[in-house]
Image (cartoon, rainbow over all chains, first blue to last red; front, side):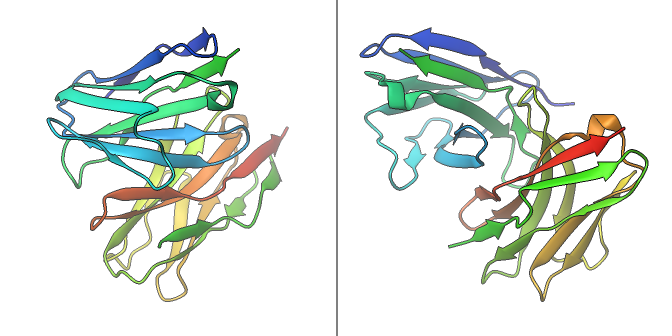
Length: 115
Length: 114
């Protein structure tokens, strides 16, 4: 089946630094990728939708300058958390699909801890 | 805005028994998809079952089946012959083509009692 690889699985960074999370579709071309954030014992909240070659669409309340999303190719999207603060600590999950009615495939998630 | 409600934060069931997880949603649209996802401790999101709103027949996948009541906007998941490996968080989710958004419910933690 389709596989989405997310890297790193865990990252610890210091406050004020930036961290990049990668989401790759390994065996299909992902025209659309989604980034979610999941707080402990809570649901997944959509942060943004990215289509290959165009700017990401951010959900209300998500700071686009803080969470930079790039979808430069059909197999790779990146989320960069800039000037990270402890409140950015969370679990981030990406998902990808080939076409609008294709199944969504999820990455394994990235646990970000900002100290 | 679409909302998805899971009123059972936690459920438990004896191994080999049957359990039903509830989900309701709110939408004014007529064409959409509904999903149940499983999230085990590994945090990987695993698709359990999918239902197209235009289909009247309830979806089934082996031990998993749904009761889709479109008029009532209800989408429950039945797990038959529960197994220890079914223990996980289960999320109900709604997808609308118009805005391409997948909206998740708050989740139900399912415990399997040996």
